[in-house]
Image (cartoon, rainbow, N blue to C red; front, side):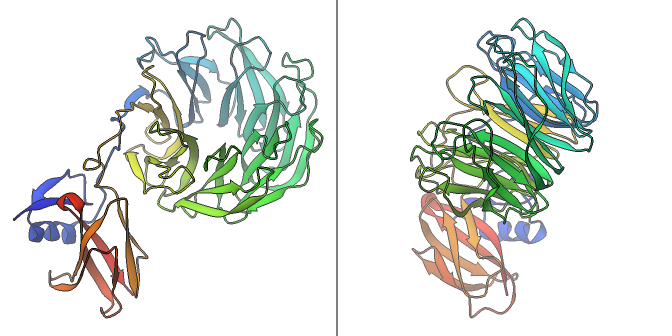
Length: 472
C-alpha cells in the first residue's frame, strides 16, 4: 500500500512513494521544498533596480490603482512603476530621484496637503528628503532636502502628524544615536530644524507612528539593533514633546523592523517586530490599550535573518495575519492568525528564491478584492508581486503544517500541526522501527540513544510527513 508522502528535500514536488523509498531520499538529501500557500509564483515588476532595499504600494497617479515604488542602494534610485491596467501589468521604471547615496527607506505620503501622494526617502549618507508629486499624476519635482545630518547613517523616516495640526511631519532615525522630528511648518513641506527626541538610541533601524495610548495623538515606536530593543515614546502633550523610551522588549536580537496592527482583535494597536540575529518575528500585546505591553509572543524563529514585517488580513477572515521577508533564506512568507487573538500557524512560504529578501508589503494590485504581495530582493535586483489565488482546502494546505518541538530533544517531543495526528513512528537511520504512538501528538523518546532519527508522522487524510530528529 502506498500513501501520499510529504518530505522536505531539494526542489522536488509531492510524489507517491513507498516509505522505504522516501526514507532513502531523506537520508540522501534533507533540504527545503517550496510551498506557495495561496499565492502564485512571482511576477517580476522590474529587474532594473540595483540592490533594491524596499518596495511599497501606493496610488501615485490618482487612477485608483496601486502602483509600485522601489528604492535601490546600488544605483541610488527612487523609482515608481505604473499599474497600467489596474490588473498588475506594470509599466517601465520611472525615476523619481537619484540624489540619495545608499538609500535606506521610502514612504508615499501627502507632504504638501494637496491631496496626492508625495515621496519621502532617506539615504545612508546623511540625508532625509522628499519629492513633490506635482500634478497628482506621478510627475515628480526635484528633490527637496529636509536635512543633511552631520553624521551618517540615516536609516529610517516616517511621515505623520506629530503636533496635531493636521499636516504631515517627519520622524527620522540616524544610527549615531539621534532620533529627531521635523515640524511641517506651513503644511506645504517647509520643514523646521530637527527637534530632538533622544540622543541615546543604539543604532536605530526603524521608526513608526501610531496612537498607542488612546489619547488621540501619534506616539513613536522604534527598533534599534545594537541593544536589541523595541521601544515607544509617548507624545505627552500631543504637540511633539516625547517621553523617555518605554521599553517593550530588549530581546529582539539585532532588531530590524517594527509594524503596528491590532493582532488580537481587541480594538487597540499591538506591536510587531522582525529581528535578524535570532531569525524572529514576534508580537507584543497592548494589554490595556494605553501602552502597557505584555511579554514577547513569538510567531516564528524560522525567518533566517528576518528583515521586514507587515500585517494585513490576507485570508479574508477578519483578523490580521503577518508577512515576513528574510534575507538568510531568501524567503517571503506569511503566518495565519488562526483564532483572531494572536495564535499563529506555522510558516506558509510564498517564495523562497527571493535572493536576500529585504522587503514585503501587501495591497490589492489586480483589483479583485483580495490582497496581493510585493517584495524586494537585493542580490537578484528584483521587485516582484504575487497574486492571491484563493484559500486552499485542508488537503491542499496540509503539507507544510508539521514541526517537531523541541528538536534536538531528550524526552517528550510534540508534533505541532493544524491537523489531527493519527500516528507517530520513529526509525533509526537503518530504517528500523524504534518507537510508535497512535492518536497523540506527543511521544517520549527518552529511551533512545543519542543520534539522528527519522520521524514518520501520519495525519488525517492519510498524509505522511518525514522529519529529522536529533536525540540528545
